[in-house]
Image (cartoon, rainbow, N blue to C red; front, side, top):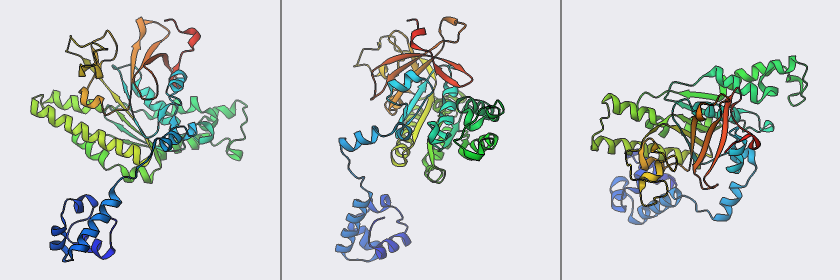
Length: 367
């Protein structure tokens, strides 16, 4: 609380320990609590309000922030065409959602982003740490190590040097790739496994100390829908109207906490979401008066993102991913940018390999 030291100390002894607590009280409440004059109480509340009020910004400052160096404001996905469309990749300070059915590569995308975030800055990474919230129980250290070694062999792959390659980037530490890989897994990636939607909410709301202490640059939730849908199916959170409202309120609180962390601590937030069937057969992709449009994944499909319209409005960027197209043997898949303030609605083709998710060259795409 930003106010006179003596007033602050007295307020804290009376249980008023935050600006939120203080601003819920009137001058008369403050006078009764700590026995000060009306003028002092009024001045203290004004000082606390001024300190708690977010500092205003303008469009020019936002533009300068968003057009900074790529390595500082974006995380590359590995899908080159998607990165180019998003003007650099996943934007720091926002919430990006990948929504897709099972087996489409959501977790592979997340692991690729983890490797990219942890990589040294001179290799295109952020040299930061990652908080990985694994509700699906699909996080794989082995797969993360494979992606890291394939994307950054000079940094993490000891075989790279055994094959006669020379790199002066690390000086005398050229052969310490295995140690750097161990450090990546042991010191830069922190995995959290909440067991309920309420626990997920509490953990996210209390992430700030861990984010600041670990120099985190990325929060991953894989997936945000799993706990909500599991509780509904098990009867813990039955699908009555009242319970659905309660679930939506928890999801809104989770989204608010994620936005707060993203903006205040300058981290990227990436969440994955599942799909469901859109039961509103009258909704169409271009029907702007129909709120169901916010969750639909294509113009002619009734497949929609899970968790409803309220959650859809909480994410800044929504990207859909598909399974293998027409059961092709080359592993060709489709990715669509459905919602983004940085690019028009667009689609790209990708495949999953040892590097994670990678783009298929434009000249090889067949529309």
